[in-house]
Amino acid sequence: MLIGHPGSSFEIDMESAGHCRKLVEQGLLGGLSAVHVVPYPGTALARMADSGRIKVIESRPNRWTMNEPLIELLDERGRVSYSTEQMRQVFREYLDIQDRCRTIAGHVSGDNHNAIV
Picture 1 (cartoon, one colour):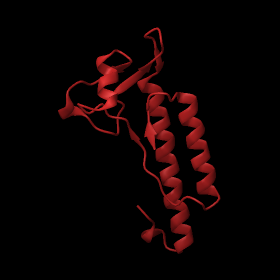
Picture 2 (tube, rainbow, N blue to C red; picture 1 turned 180 degrees about the vertical axis):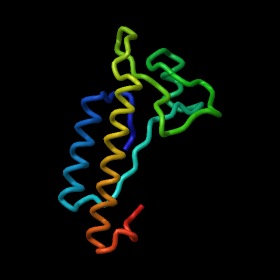
Picture 3 (cartoon, rainbow, N blue to C red; picture 1 turned 120 degrees about the vertical axis):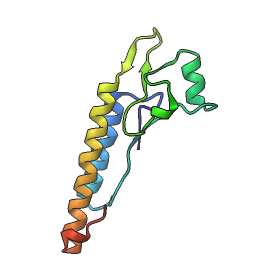
C-alpha cells in the first residue's frame, strides 16, 4: 500500500486500511506491505514537488526511508491537506494489520514460531 499518494487523503488511506483489515479477518489477505511515497528524481512525484503541488519534508535523498513520510500533500491554495502526522497514523494502522496477519498465520499453521514474517 502506498501512503500519501497525490489524490489521496487521510480519510481515503484510513478507509483502505479498514478494507485491508476486513480482508485479513476474513482470511482473504495473508500479508501486506505499506510504504510512504518517495519523490525520486525524474519521477512525476518529483515534478509535482518542483511545481509546488506537494511539499517535500526531507530533501536529502541519503536520508530517505519509506518508513517515514517524505512529503505532505497540499490543497489548491497551497495549504497542507494531508500531513506527515496523519501519514504516520495510517502507517501505524498498517503495521497493526501486518501484526494481525502474522497472528492469524501463526494460528492457521498451529505453530506461532513459524508464522509468516
